[in-house]
Length: 240
Image (tube, rainbow, N blue to C red):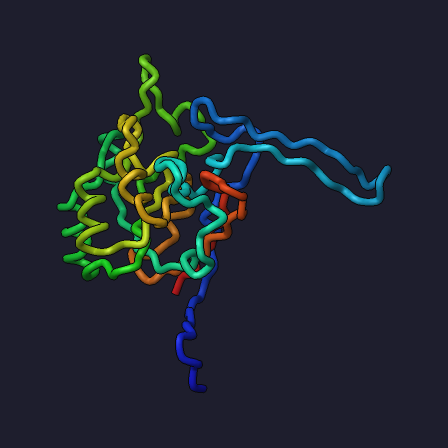
């Protein structure tokens, strides 16, 4: 069958959740609102079951919008639908993070990955598998604060972020930690660089160990919050 011009097709054999289940005791960034559920209707009394949900825009598995770091930039409600279905590559740095929780991805890491799998294509989201998803149910280990309150978890170095944006023209970044920036980086350099344009920043991903290095397509389901600085997301991986 001839495809209409401009129509794309996605071939996949598996669909995998990349989002954690939202619950009241998930790891939260310091100062973020807690997750709350309140029952407002019950089957026995009202004929149906309904809860009210409260949580922060950057809670659980989430996407950050440009206006979270750049004044007068667009909110999450302005992301085009087409921008939320994107190819992804996965760079596995679990060996490095096992010995250094502050590890930051380098340009050398990207070059080594490309020597094995080919150059990262324009328009991809680059995802880091740090192994941090296994710490999700231990809030202390997940954020890994020291005695001074500084977080220690891996992320993207600013040099490699600039390289990926300029030389590979990527669509965004994602990670299984609470931030694409290493925990010690309180300047949020990678967030700021990526979100200078309406690109994608995904944090607190899971099940990354089930993804191949290349070939996956992401379908990112946002909440279209008016002026939102981000949104909890349901991310589906369509795996070939």
